[in-house]
Amino acid sequence: MTPRFAQPNHHSHRTRFHLNRRHFLRIGGTGLMGISLPGLLAAADSPTALPARADSLIVLFLNGGPSHLDMWDMKPEGSADSRGQFQPIASTLPGVPVCEHLPQLARQMKHCTLIRSMHHSVNNAHALAVYTAMTGHDRGDANRIVGQADDDHPAPGAALAKLRPATSHIPPYVCLP
Image (cartoon, rainbow, N blue to C red):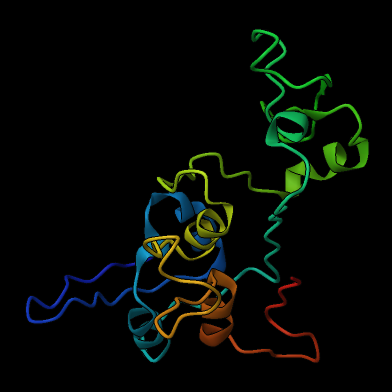
């Protein structure tokens, strides 16, 4: 079932919507990350919210990790300066090869959603780019804000944990620095 989106109240900047983790992943690259936390919390209180179907959500964000050219996007037919040094191998997700050094991941790709549409306009400021990628909000001038700010936005996992609290001893969201 697809999520139902209601018309926004013209007297407010908030939009009420209903989503579960699976829908969140499907439309994650289309700007949903820019929705306000009050809008997410209002959706959690809605009596018409759709039941969640996903058991878990894993966001693999490798800050300072291997390049996407070496893991997911090898570009074997590209020029030497646009491809990684490793070769792609087929995975269980049709049309999505992975690096030759990740055979176990290649076998598990049928369980993954690879989002390639994310981008940002932050120039050469990795911390701000991470903030933008993880919250959907531009934090502003890199020289103005150092560390946490009072108006920081939550990560998607934190917002989803608020919408769907833990039902077992396993926490709904964990972030390792």
